[in-house]
Image (tube, rainbow, N blue to C red; front, side, top):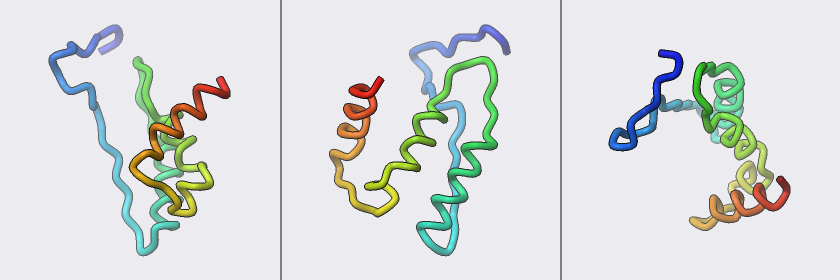
Length: 80
Protein backbone atom coordinates (compact mmCIF):
# COMPACT_ATOMS: atom_id res chain seq x y z
CA UNK A 1 0.00 0.00 0.00
CA UNK A 2 1.08 3.60 -0.48
CA UNK A 3 3.63 4.75 2.06
CA UNK A 4 4.56 1.23 3.21
CA UNK A 5 8.23 0.73 4.04
CA UNK A 6 9.69 -2.73 3.59
CA UNK A 7 11.26 -3.66 6.95
CA UNK A 8 15.04 -4.22 6.75
CA UNK A 9 14.74 -7.73 8.18
CA UNK A 10 12.83 -8.86 5.06
CA UNK A 11 14.15 -9.48 1.58
CA UNK A 12 13.70 -6.26 -0.35
CA UNK A 13 13.08 -8.10 -3.62
CA UNK A 14 9.45 -7.53 -4.47
CA UNK A 15 9.52 -9.04 -7.95
CA UNK A 16 11.66 -11.11 -10.26
CA UNK A 17 11.57 -10.71 -14.02
CA UNK A 18 12.82 -13.56 -16.20
CA UNK A 19 12.78 -13.83 -19.98
CA UNK A 20 13.65 -16.75 -22.22
CA UNK A 21 14.14 -17.08 -25.96
CA UNK A 22 15.90 -19.18 -28.58
CA UNK A 23 18.96 -16.90 -28.60
CA UNK A 24 20.69 -14.61 -26.13
CA UNK A 25 19.99 -11.60 -28.35
CA UNK A 26 16.26 -12.40 -28.45
CA UNK A 27 16.19 -12.89 -24.68
CA UNK A 28 17.89 -9.51 -24.15
CA UNK A 29 15.41 -7.82 -26.48
CA UNK A 30 12.51 -9.44 -24.62
CA UNK A 31 14.00 -8.26 -21.32
CA UNK A 32 14.34 -4.69 -22.62
CA UNK A 33 10.70 -4.68 -23.65
CA UNK A 34 9.59 -6.28 -20.38
CA UNK A 35 11.53 -3.69 -18.36
CA UNK A 36 9.97 -0.90 -20.43
CA UNK A 37 6.49 -2.28 -19.71
CA UNK A 38 7.06 -3.22 -16.05
CA UNK A 39 5.16 -0.92 -13.69
CA UNK A 40 5.74 -0.76 -9.95
CA UNK A 41 4.22 2.22 -8.22
CA UNK A 42 4.91 3.84 -4.89
CA UNK A 43 8.58 2.96 -4.46
CA UNK A 44 11.87 3.49 -6.24
CA UNK A 45 12.99 0.48 -8.25
CA UNK A 46 16.13 -0.67 -10.01
CA UNK A 47 14.31 -0.87 -13.35
CA UNK A 48 16.17 2.14 -14.84
CA UNK A 49 19.50 0.68 -13.69
CA UNK A 50 18.75 -2.67 -15.33
CA UNK A 51 17.51 -0.97 -18.50
CA UNK A 52 20.84 0.89 -18.76
CA UNK A 53 22.69 -2.35 -18.14
CA UNK A 54 20.83 -3.96 -21.06
CA UNK A 55 22.27 -1.25 -23.37
CA UNK A 56 25.92 -1.53 -22.30
CA UNK A 57 28.07 -2.55 -25.31
CA UNK A 58 30.15 -5.05 -23.32
CA UNK A 59 27.04 -6.70 -21.91
CA UNK A 60 25.44 -6.91 -25.35
CA UNK A 61 28.63 -8.41 -26.79
CA UNK A 62 28.91 -10.95 -23.97
CA UNK A 63 32.24 -9.38 -23.07
CA UNK A 64 32.19 -9.28 -19.28
CA UNK A 65 33.71 -10.84 -16.18
CA UNK A 66 32.69 -11.16 -12.55
CA UNK A 67 33.99 -7.59 -12.09
CA UNK A 68 31.59 -6.20 -14.71
CA UNK A 69 28.93 -4.97 -12.28
CA UNK A 70 31.48 -3.20 -10.08
CA UNK A 71 32.96 -1.46 -13.14
CA UNK A 72 29.51 -0.63 -14.51
CA UNK A 73 28.43 1.00 -11.24
CA UNK A 74 31.69 2.94 -10.99
CA UNK A 75 31.30 4.22 -14.58
CA UNK A 76 27.70 5.16 -13.90
CA UNK A 77 28.60 7.06 -10.71
CA UNK A 78 31.44 8.89 -12.50
CA UNK A 79 29.04 10.25 -15.12
CA UNK A 80 26.35 11.38 -12.68
